Image (cartoon, rainbow, N blue to C red):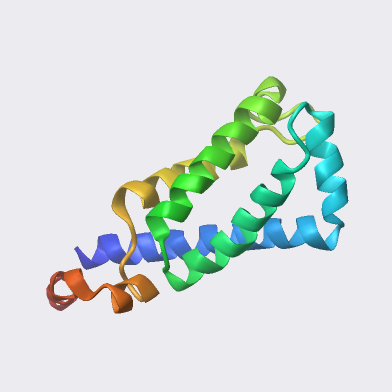
Length: 142
């Protein structure tokens, strides 16, 4: 059981850090650029704010282990949207000028795993909602 929690912890930290950086870059490069790009692919520009904030705040939440399943569900939606709307037509490995959906697919798989299984190890949620702490303690001792 501890091995599963350790694996989920590693996935949670990695996905959180990667999405945090993606969200941060959207703001550092000028969110207006992302708004314009969303509009250019037929999506409402205001959605760029929602996606960027979800990536940024959700990344922090995953790193600290807060609302892991909720954030992972939101990331699942974002990744499905990115794959279907932008990357699918490029193919798995892309077209030489733009990357394909291979990395998006990996992010999607991790988000789905965390949505299904959660991640309790070293999580703020575990401290706040101590309902399963005895189970986790037992699994660590085994």
